[in-house]
Length: 397
Ligand code: BGC
Image (tube, rainbow, N blue to C red; front, side, top):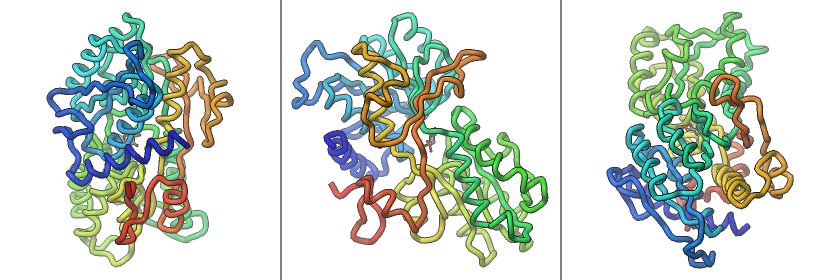
């Protein structure tokens, strides 16, 4: 419960950030983009002292809502547990993230938590961390380097599967005559998660494409054709506008647009609202439960989001870090020992940092949120509150 209250405090900061249009150019809770890092002492209540261990927390960017939540949750929880923290956001620039992590190593961090911008481009710092004996938890996104000691994330394949199943059920693909028209928008090719999300969805929908029940008028069904550089809303918007202009301006009906996450979903929804001439409401998927997308869901502009309770991801990361640093048992027994009130699997076979090298993974369980269950899934557990205008807000402070 204490952890939960700490997260509520953290969310207050995030709301303030979001109100300022959160970016990487600095705020009281995050460093300016160019300076990279912010050290902080342990919370006074934790009784921290000079001997406290220091944890480096490298987040990708403040320009996407979820990473502000993750950074704040991790920072709060590690400080409350008596650790010093250094938190960086690297403006979605890989070189900056490399510099930020190098600075953390130079400052003698005892453990690194890294949500990689490009999981294939951190070899130098990862090798430095390995040489210095600093354990690394790959946070949310896997890092393709064997010095990644552990991976903490949600079941990424299941995220995509839930999106695909939502489309399948909403269109009643097993019973309805069809055919139905669908388009796809996937994530950043540099993000190891993006392929898992896309494959999870495709594995559900591909049989219907092959049978002709689902048709993709653009013909763009390969990940490389539908990927979105850095998950940017504007990039997704541009491509959606092009697809609509090229394949739907003649009156073709658009039934569904599978989007891998909320930032891309925002761009697609904007294009559909502005440029799609059909009168039907289009099924649009998402992931994260960003506030703007929850508004769209309530307004019927987006159909669903796959919610991942990142507060719980931070809890797992903290307990794992404690086990690593304070010589507890850092394996699957952590799950039964922890007393977490949420589901988490220990998986030693699904994620490889190189051929034949498995990364032990703690995988949390994602959940589908729609207009109908939004309050039950997000408000009742305390992740969001209903604002005065009836839309969900991250917290009321
Ligand atoms: C995360 C998603 C997020 C995306 C863009 C992925 O790695 O798992 O939750 O939507 O990055 O930030």
